[in-house]
Length: 292
Image 1 (cartoon, one colour):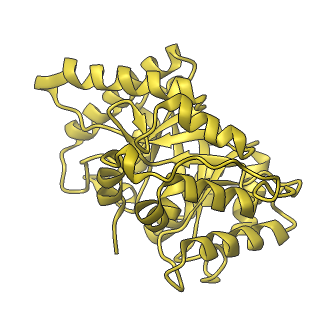
Image 2 (cartoon, one colour):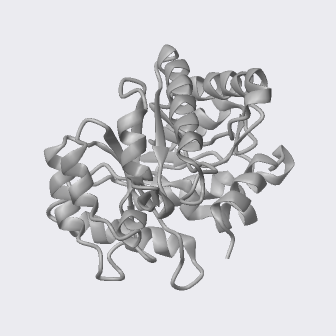
């Protein structure tokens, strides 16, 4: 199965000729949206994007009823190989908004100026898209790292967050399971929350990876209501399919915290059909009374 890192590399290399040309959109493509405003991380449609292009994926999620998007296909000033203004127009035409974006670059002290220049270009591109958040999806720090390395990333995130804030964009960090392990006696995730500049860095809590890391996402939502401002709603496969995730408790705490920016993310497809998985996840949440 293709992982996120491979997908991001492929997405950044998609050329215009490999993308589906924009179509004249009929009203049948744009659904009669339910009152609920749901988001989806476009990594969930990675196989469709790689096969048929970003336009096919945008039309598919719009037809289902998703309204907020989180992208995962930035490279060299382009979003899924498109100029930011072009990508924004495609979203606008389908009644959707690119609210958040996953991208990032590892820190390198010797090449700090080059790294920050990379961020300047990325921030400019996502300003044009109208993104509310830019989120770094991972970092090369784990339980085998030194605490000094983790602190370096806390400082790095704070510096990048200051840059994005100057452009009117929030900066966040997204977890996997490793962040719930320890370096010495310090839980990586908690150390991050306590040592980033809280004004400039927010966290996107992936509730499934938190759960898989042996922790309770509701506990984290209660403990850090001002810092955890984005959420990945995720399950082993489609949302609600495993029966092991307490989405009702998660959403109730999200609502209490006034968290409005959340995105479905699908890591695995039951029938090798990303659109069917996105539809199943949407239907589950649309029927849930606790989802507003």
